[in-house]
Length: 165
Image (cartoon, helix red, strand yellow):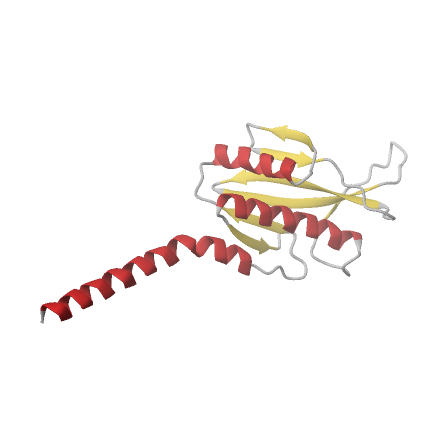
């Protein structure tokens, strides 16, 4: 009877241990499962880190990913990258990253390469998950998504895609 109890206790401890391990690795696997839908224009990277540290890490991952930061506001926990040049394109994407209540919000805009008269400023177009693979809008969304995945991996965060009005 004591051999049965020993075997039962060993199995119970093994099952509990494997259950705890699965819970601690869940955020990493859930970020890999996030799939954007057509029309999505916002990516959220959730984290349990304090906002100030999350802001610093978000900026570090931007730089490590090859983005140049053109604007940063430490009080509002937001930053913007310089526009990325795309070969044979008339518009160039840039990212806007901000931290709000434990999540990094990633949006993007397409900036026109053509110059306009000073009285007619162009409003950048929000990047959405649309178009064929080589289309500038899709390339811009791929930049957003790639950055979000790198950030999620570096902080063990979760990714959510959404449509923002």
